[in-house]
Length: 256
Image 1 (cartoon, rainbow, N blue to C red):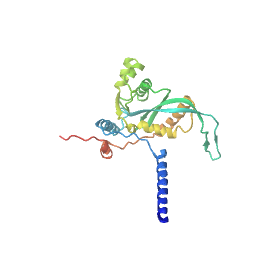
Image 2 (cartoon, rainbow, N blue to C red; image 1 turned 45 degrees about the horizontal axis):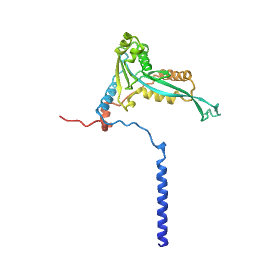
Image 3 (tube, rainbow, N blue to C red; image 1 turned 45 degrees about the vertical axis):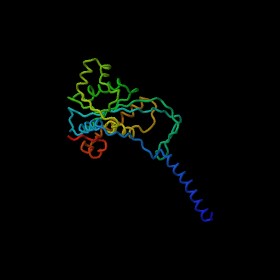
Image 4 (cartoon, rainbow, N blue to C red; image 1 turned 120 degrees about the horizontal axis):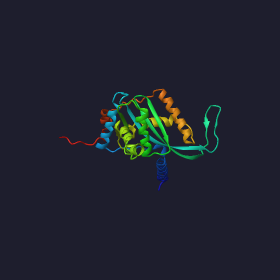
């Protein structure tokens, strides 16, 4: 082989080796991958989606409020070493921490009124859900004639659970004031309460909290501040928009 061919072969080998290394590096970049639950095209999904979207198009009516409910779990952690604040006002915390258990957050939001309520509990089950539903009817919306409650279709969201918490007449009275509307599977983005939970995480839970009492105090301070501002959610996405922008989710139809 000539010297020129040797150089060409060497370049090829180097390119092949370096190219393989680069390809391998590109496989190991988890920060460039975003997790997303992609719904499958189905009549069931779009039917529930459009039902929720139609609800959000209703005008504000205090006698018939639209209320959204969602839950989230948060870890309680305590510091193992004391942190400090530097001269620029920046807080510094040690990367080590101690797990102190978890709490459940129930977010109840009324988008058009700019009001929300948050309940912090130790567990997330049908009993705790039923207690929150009872508070929606009997404490927060006592003047409402009818309440539309938007939530996901979790197994814990059992109407029968109200009969396990309240005596029958009271349970029936609560349920008779609520119209349940469910977001579709893989459609949690349709729940305004989930948006409020995201805002709470960014604005109201800015440092490590070790106890449920402290956690609840921090959450309620955020609730009061946001309610005082009447921070509303102006939902603009409609069923008509969905039929265009999310056309791929709609199943093929049989024309008569």
